[in-house]
Each structure stands twice: as structure tokens, then as C-alpha cells.
Image (cartoon, rainbow over all chains, first blue to last red; front, top):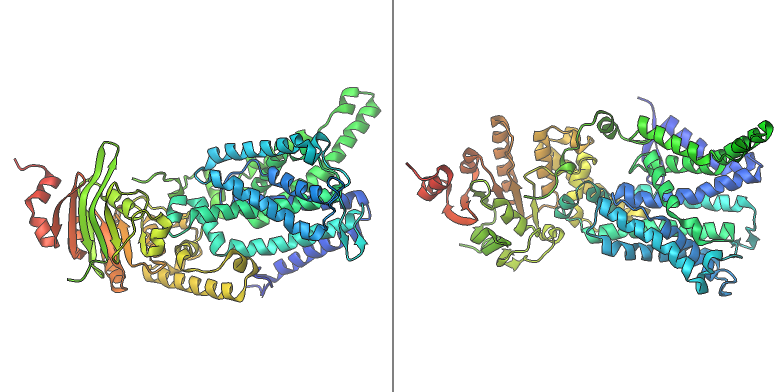
Length: 360
Length: 255
């Protein structure tokens, strides 16, 4: 037996090599902007931060509580617009960034409850369709309320944060650290929640809602808390996103954003917090750093060959799609998963109790 | 005689034109083991589903300790002290055995989401107490060695016992067991009888739906027989066993 250490903050007990590995990963993240002086790279990794927060939030709804939400980008939009409207020249309000970070999260959470209420009785496919509709409606509302939201042009000149007199400006490094701190705090809080009264209630609802209610789980509050807490992460992400970009428009929050977040969760391993983290980070880096580079290469290749078709080819989404297909073919349970789910998906054993439907 | 702990008074449940339960009156004494028996489709599970709040009765009343629980939602019925198992086992498949039992303790817990997220000393203390109690219950049903396994990986007989442990978690006043011996072999049935008696000895009143007559007659203080939704007989096991209406319901009219 190798030696084990107890991690602080309720992260549990792990082997020494795991603790050291974790420390090395945190140190690598903390030092990344110092190691890589390429501002473009740091900005791309910082953008992975908002994506990661979105993945954490949706993981509560889909992974923990088992509520399939296909319109999650709507809450991201709500968070971004909340901050952009009160901290820009739009209404000349210029509220401070830091309280609005919480404010945006609260507004998004409120809309999470608003979406949650009418959908309490829905599950699976039906819930997916309603949330899909919600995800389509919200950007349309922002598009058409041009008096308040700037319509198709969106809102520009969004205020950038100032931290004790130090302006963030357009330098990605402070945003990088802001995302890092928020993401680490989120990870700890979510890990605590997962193994708590509420976390178990979420999972029980996911596994068998009827049995859960008979064991004393209040389905209404449990689901609404999942929607609200999930949405609040999107609100946080939206607020920082708007501040970093200083410009937002309705077309940045379309269906493909919701689907990308969902695929990160499936890629990482449904319901697993570590899986959500790794899946989110991998997809974000792939989309923000690696694949845009591929387009540059094909462009250069086409120029060298004087072939216009190759020059204009955008392989980004072809490769991205191919990776998702391959992962689902060879590792349908996701990158991080428990052994039993792996056995089920690879050998097709039916689930036992969760599959039994209806009450006599 | 003292007032019954669970009193079903004139309970009727109709689904459209079908009367699943008709004017059923059944009194369950505190600390007793009662059985609800009857041929398939007699309405036994419907009675459990009405008690636990899945269905609202068409007519009649259900009282727990003198207070009506009609109209309460399933989680409120659980909080009032009535827990149940299911005919077709309904565990939380991708949760551990221990977590399954801990879900059962929801109604006894007070930790708010904020307490849990921040792991306040209060939340930690409660979490420890709840997991200790869950382990004690697993020991009681003989599953302590399996506490960290996924519920779905347990063999059938153990899943039945886990469902019972989960239902016992909040220390309910009444435990409703829906065909706990279904699919059990004779050895498992004997163990189950001992377990049900031990549950009663913990101060939990037990009501069971069961098809196995040997088991029912062996442990019940009182037996109620349903046929086509109506009570056709009631009493101690010996008198019910000899009741001609019961024999007729089970075997058909004698030739």
C-alpha cells in the first residue's frame, strides 16, 4: 500500500503521487502566462476559462441531475448581456465589474428558475425540445430588442474590470488569472456539493425520479436548484466574457455553443466532475488553439500549390467532428468514467432498476 | 384498543370506469406486521400508491397517527414517516450502496446547499452522522461489505435488502413492503421473515403485500384480503386461511 495524503477543502484522500500530480497541474496553470509569453496563446487558454465554467454549470443540470438541456447558451447570453447593458455606454450606467459578477450570476439563475418551472414535469426528449426552444428564443429577443440591446450590432465598449486600481485592459493575463481563480473555487464548491444532501438528491432524480420522491426528495426544489445553479455558472462566464471581449452580439450565443458545451460533458464522462474539467479543457484548447492553426496550414498549403480549393478549405469543424465521432466509437463512456458504466456501454448489458418504467 | 397508527377509511380509487379499490377500510396497529393479499390485479399496489401520494383517492381518507395525509405529495408522505419499497426494485443504479441509503435520509437532514458547498462544520457533522447511520443500517440488512459497490452490480436478493435499508433510513413510522419475497428462494424467504420481524422489533410498523402464503401466514399479526378492489376478508392468519370467500377468490368456486 502506498502512502496517502488528505487534501484540504474536502477534496478527499488520494495517493501521494496523485497529490503531487495535482499540485504540478495547478502549478502549471498558475505559471502558464509566465512560461508562454505568446499573448495569443494566453488569450486562447483564458478563453478556455469561460468554456470551462459553462461546462461546469451544464454538468450540474445534465451530468448530476440528468436533465437534458439543449439551450444552455441562453444563460451565457443572459449573463453577458446583463453585464454589458449595465456597464457600457449603452445606458451610460458603468456599474462596477465585481458586484456585477455576482449580479450576472443571479440574473442568469433567476432565468434558470423561469425555464425550470414550466418544464418540471418534462424529462428526456421532451425537456430537450423545450430547452432547445428557450435557447433559440433568448438570442432572438436580444436581436429584436434593439432599443436596449443594440440589435444585430450588439453592445460595444463594454467596461473592462479594474482590480484595486489595476486596469485589466486588453491584456489577456489578468483575465486568465481571474478565470483560473473562479474555476478553481467552482471545482472545490462543486466537489463538495456532489457529495452532499443536494448532490445525492440530484443524482437520485437522475437515476429514478419516482423512487427519489418516495425517499423524501422534493423534486420541485431539487430540479429548480439544478437549473438555477447551472445557469449561475453561465452568468458568471458571460459576465467575464463580455468584459474581456468588450463587444457582444446575439449571434455568439447560438445553438452550436450549447451543443459544444454538451459534447464536452459527454466527451469527459457524464456526471464526473473531473471528466467535465478534462473534456471542457480539451475541447476548448482544440477549438481555440489547435484547430484554427489547421486552417492556417491548409491555407499555406493551398497557396504553395496554387490550388484555390485547398486554400479556402476550412477543416476546423471537419476535424472537430471527426474527433467526437472517434471518441464516441471507441470510448462511449467518455474519457473519465466508472468501470460499471464502461461495462454497460461496451457489452450492452441493460440497466436494471433505472430502466423499469411506470408504476403498476 | 388504542387508535390505529395507520387508518384507511372507506378508500375508493377509480381510474375512469375502472374501480381499482372500493371502499376499503383497514386499520394498522402500531408495532404490528400486517399483510395485504389477493389475486393478481386485486388492487394491492394501488392501495400503496394511494397511501404514498402517487394517486389522489377518489373517496375516503388515510390517517397517520390521527392526521389525514390525503393530498400530500410523495416526498411529504415520506417526511411524515411512511417509507416504501417497490414491486419492481427501483434503486439508484449508478450510485453506491451507501449513497442509496443516504438518499433515504434526506428528510432527516438540514444542510442547506450553501452549508454543503462550503462544507461548514455543521454540514460535515451531519454528513458524518448520516453516513454512520447508513452504515449501521447496511450492517442490519447484511450489506456492510458491499457499501462502496454500485447498486446495479448487486445480485437480485441483495438489491431487495438494499431497498429495505434505504426505506428504513429516516427511521419511518410505517414501512410498506411491496412483494419483498418476489423471486426469492426458500432460504432467502426465511431470512426475509427474520428481517421483517427484526424491523418490527426496531419499532417500525410493517405493512406488506405478498403472494407467498407461507410467509404471510408465518409473520403477519393481521391479514387483509382484497379481490377486485374489495375487501373480502380480514383477521388473524388462521381465520383468514379458513374463510371460504378467500379460498374461492384464490381457487375459484369449488366444483
